[in-house]
Amino acid sequence: MTRRPQGAHLPDAYAESTAPLPAPELTEAECRRCGTYIAGLDGRYACGVCGWVNDHSEGHRRLPRADEDPDRPPQGRRRPRQWPSPPPQGPAEGADGGA
Image 1 (cartoon, rainbow, N blue to C red):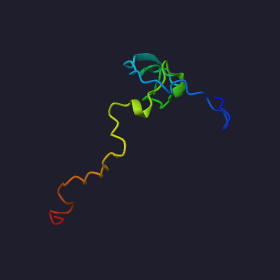
Image 2: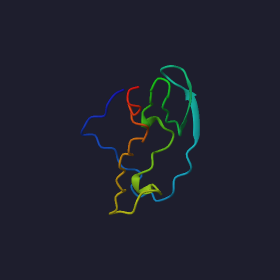
Image 3: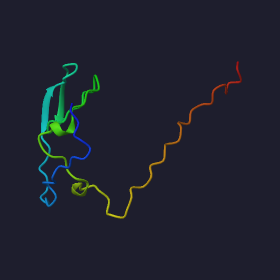
Image 4: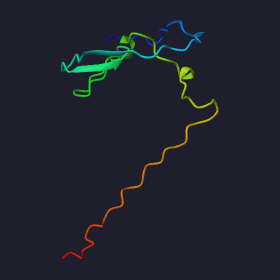
């Protein structure tokens, strides 16, 4: 894979796009590393067997921007912090007195 030079800037062809994006298309292919039959959305794949992932630029359509996400919280609000769940409460080890 060749990397783009750091100073390179691509023109933003979608800067003024306000039309809603069409629903993603389910696509299927073989994993390039292990050959497993995999499915993805719009030509973007991740193999659950070997961990191979294709580059996002190989997809069939552009990815939506954050402001196009219908589930995005209103500006100025952050999502609530998710605290880790407490450990499961089970019988204490050695509760039988070691008998």
